[in-house]
Length: 202
Image (cartoon, rainbow, N blue to C red; front, side, top):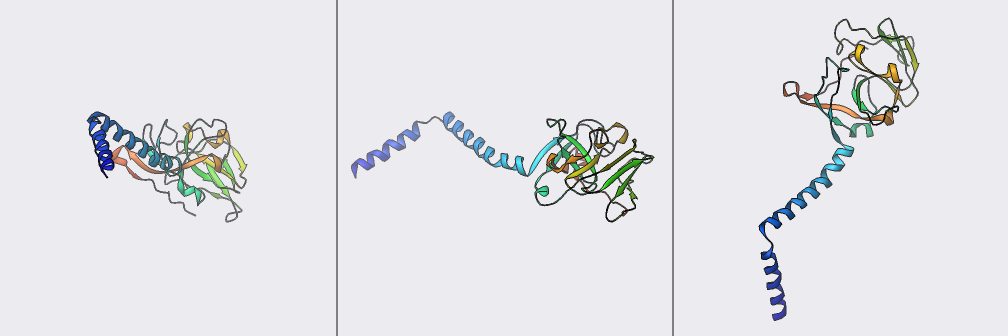
C-alpha cells in the first residue's frame, strides 16, 4: 500500500510542477482541436460563409455583402426556380459565382426580345417568366438564346442582366457544380435576415 501512496504523491507533484503558462497552452490546444473537429464538418456539409463580389446580382445583393450558404438542403431536395445559389462553373472550378436559378432540368429556355420564356410539361406552349419580384422595373434580358436542359442541368442568370456573366455566356450548369443556396444575409445589419424565394405568377 505504501508504494501506491508514494506513486500517487509523485503524480500529484508532477501536476503541480506544470507551470500555469504551460497549462494554459495545453487548454488552448485542446480547444483548437475540439473546435476543428466540430467546425470542419459543419463547414464542409452544412454551412459556409460567402462574400458577394461584383455587381451581377444588384439590386438584391451588393458587393461585399456577407452571406451564409446552406448546403444540406440539396442532399435531400432539388434546387427550385428563383433560388439564389452559389456554384463553381465547370470552365473555372476555382471560382465561386452567385446567380439565380431560372431554368430547371428538362425545360427549354428561350430568351428573345428581352424576355425569358419557359417551356415544360406544365406549359408546353411556353410562358413568359414573371420576374417583377426581383428585377428592377424596366429591366430587359439581352441575348437571343434557345437551350434545352438535360436531367441534371440548371439555367442561371444574374439579377443585373446587363452586367452578369451567367448561363448566357457559359451555358447551363450541372447540379454537381452547386455548392449550396444563399440562406442568410449577415451583413450589412440593416438588411440582415433570411433570403426568401420570389413570388412567381404561374
